[in-house]
Length: 201
View 1 (cartoon, rainbow, N blue to C red):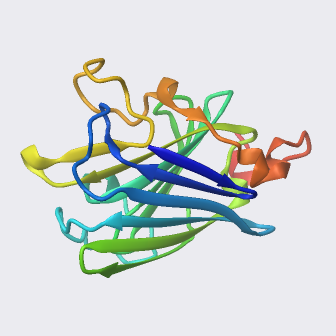
View 2 (view 1 turned 90 degrees about the horizontal axis):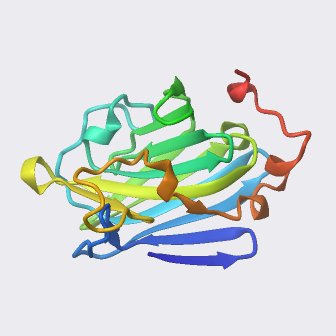
């Protein structure tokens, strides 16, 4: 795991499995930065495994249960338990979920602009995430990746759980998320005047 801050840009690197072992392959890179008043851009560069294959959905459109395929995921958590879950596939499909409490999905399949490309054994993606999708006062973050199938299925995490602590992977163990300086990217997210229509519960 590697983190770097460059002003209003945050860079993350996934190098561990969900239970804190080396992944055994090239790292996954994620970058977060503000691109305009309405969006945060997430860029991905990751090894391409092509297993499982293309889920068959339309590139650029939401796809339900994308977590069953090859994906990179990012979770943004607020102190009151609300969080945004983003999933991205090398073939261009995505999934956006809003959750109010652990595994308590509030909304799903929200639209966003996402494009991806595959070049040999590497894929890259670029997503423009509407600022209003983030819950108020995002304070913690985690990122994940999944690839392979059957007994070769591999689960990876930016902030993994301690080795031997759990028997199965679970990306919704919010207690293992760590701090993110989200205010440096979206300052108004921490303002008392911040409003978000998707989060009007």
